[in-house]
Length: 211
Image 1 (spheres, helix red, strand yellow):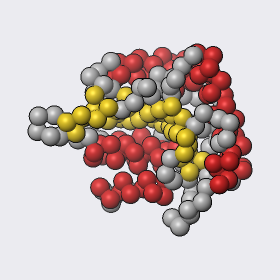
Image 2 (cartoon, helix red, strand yellow; image 1 turned 45 degrees about the vertical axis):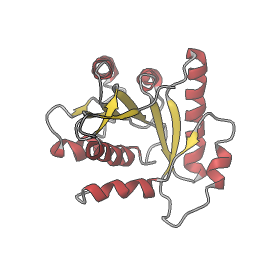
Image 3 (cartoon, one colour; image 1 turned 90 degrees about the vertical axis):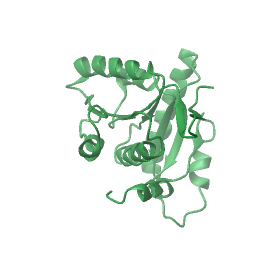
């Protein structure tokens, strides 16, 4: 299984062995892709201070890039919008940037994506180790989310690929919410696991209260 391997250097500091990539995606808009990307990118930068954590924002809205670029060092953020007007140039650039990053000995790339049909963009997701899929517990969001996961599952089967591992992240969840029967039932029959909700993941903000 291709997962993030955490080791410690001679001084006992945490390190990541082998560069990895995490894709944040869903064909449904407004489900929290950029929110999740920003939280996790900031968290990983605090957690693995000696490792490169690269943000690649492919959403034409550029929310992740806009929030993180001012607080990032040179080369830590890239804005490569992929949409109807951008595919030809930026898809090629994106592929090259991600492959070069993954050839490094360590580091983590976070790839944010926009809403809408994937088209050829699915190829980028298949360069990544994990696919994080945020969604609310509303059927308005769950239906297209399940369609998206089924499409990825089918492509994984066609490509005979074990990755990206699909992780569904509940969003817009009350901090007091303890039962997720609706979403767990909806995920029956698809190859995905359920992560803690974004309301809990937002604890990453404890590292820096400027968000």
